[in-house]
Image 1 (cartoon, rainbow, N blue to C red):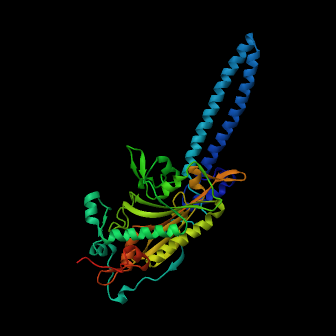
Image 2 (cartoon, helix red, strand yellow):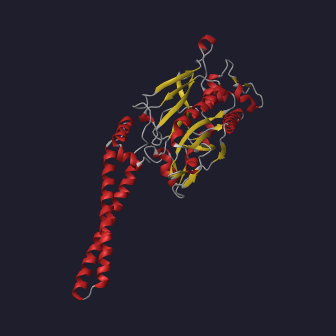
Image 3 (cartoon, rainbow, N blue to C red):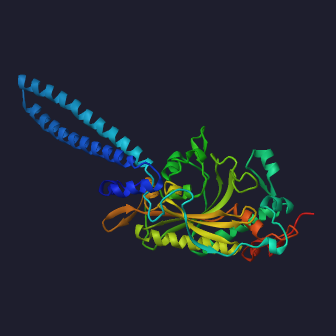
Length: 422
């Protein structure tokens, strides 16, 4: 939730952010109107309450006709007090709803939509398979040849966009995730195995029940949601708490299964395991001071790039445009790896600076000399199932085998090459 003081003091900043996102600037005016009505009703309520108390003292001293007249006035005043309180409550409920609809105010993100990102850097060069004398296979063909991916039986058991990782496929995913967790621990993160079911308050508080609510699985009988990232559980971990940041950011690395309905993505990346309903991920999450948030964001990007170096794939870093940000993010950097068979870049990691947006909703604060204030939260991907796609395609060899990147070999018992199943 955005800062109400920012909305009052700098509404043009919020309007500009809304326009950059391609969202509704009129929400700002509607929220300001609801806030003005709430404050006006509260002021009138307090005035009438004071008058009501003063009148009560007069009634206690009066008698006869004077007392009857004062009692009648007291009854009318009581009705007025209740009416002003109801108006204030209605305006507050309207304001809360509007504030939940306004996404975070962007900080440095380029304006525009999905295609308006800015490329910040490119690392490595795509292989020239033609020069090597063979046509690259896609990850599914490679995975089936290695006995690593089984989408047919996944669909038989659970439906479309589900799969089995088998043999070296399962080992490769565990290698990626264990490498990610080891790196996180080396950088001072606390490893966490997080819940994958959360309450509506947690899901809403972290910003996942807005425009993309149709991508979230809900268990209606239990009134719980399946998370699409451990970010959700980690953002709620310190909910309604005052945390100590005097020694620096509090960093957690969450390992969890993740679930996404992929609503609206029909026909996109339906082959293989690029866009699926269930996957595993190690996610960084940080609570820090507002002043340190931008620097922490750069650190998270650097940690993601360190992980990408371990799998030795060409990639680029993009500054995501405002219209392609989630509602909680003020700025987001994506790392996208080259996908040879589709000749395009595929998102492998993203890191978002959510400033105080999530923490304000979840009521996470730090103590300061002047009292308490809301902290900042950030998140970033360190490894996920999708990485298998780009590892297989970028490290394939002409005979269908796949070279294991050196950074993952210790997690695969020293295995250097994944050989096709004969």
